[in-house]
Image (cartoon, rainbow, N blue to C red; front, top):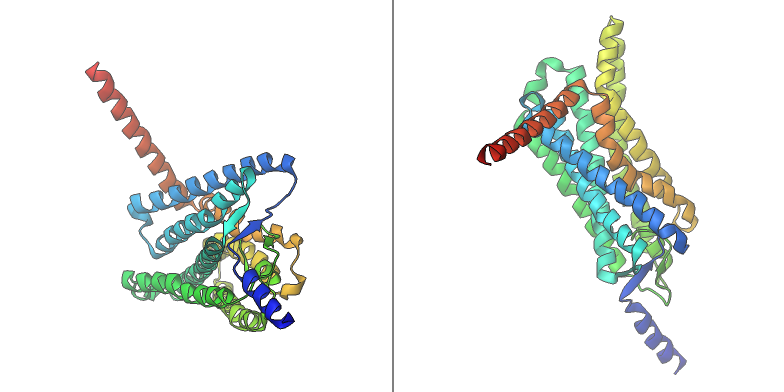
Length: 328
């Protein structure tokens, strides 16, 4: 009889229809200031990355593999941030609930788009490696067809990784508590709510997840070791500075992105605490916001492309105003 009751209770607790995202703060007075801060961050992220995309596609001088990859990185950053921030903004001002299906869907796209960012950084590192270490064959190696294939690979592979962990988590039974101590649906806080065994989930995350996370970083490290060795062979100091300057922006983004990700995910689920929220904000929100500034402030060609885009828009507005005034 007791066993039947416990089984009945388990079946009831497994049918969690929604979760509660506690967010960054539970204090009512913090909600509006946090909403304003993240709303501004979101607007800056969307505007900055859109400007990068428009500048690259409107300037013929920026039609190179490096900027081709950068435009896709900006597009993925827009999608990645949109997966997270609008949900946060809703939570700041109204209900903090998210449906069970919505929670798993958010986790799926966070992992898929976040890992796409990761693999695009690998492709960009490979592009710099070819440009510096094998410049005479750069045009042949980095052909448009190969660039498209590299982007397609970077965008498709992460979806299989994300689907695996989402399907495994869907098999987990959740208990009475449906409160997620986080501002998004992530693996570690969700697993903590389970009342069934999560051994398989944690093993797969530690093995497959770690391999999928560390492999891109190792590829980037290998590329930069080869780049460093090639640059050290350049006789002139000016040549060395020029070679390093083409990699500075990418290295800054890689350090920011992987530093925060390793801090969050390369640790046991049991040690995950609220302190990890700040590191999560860095790689989910701030990196996407800072990318346009990092790449544009250190890149003369991109600065020029942005100026051309802004001047073109100003000229269009002047022409529209002049046409309107001439009709009056």
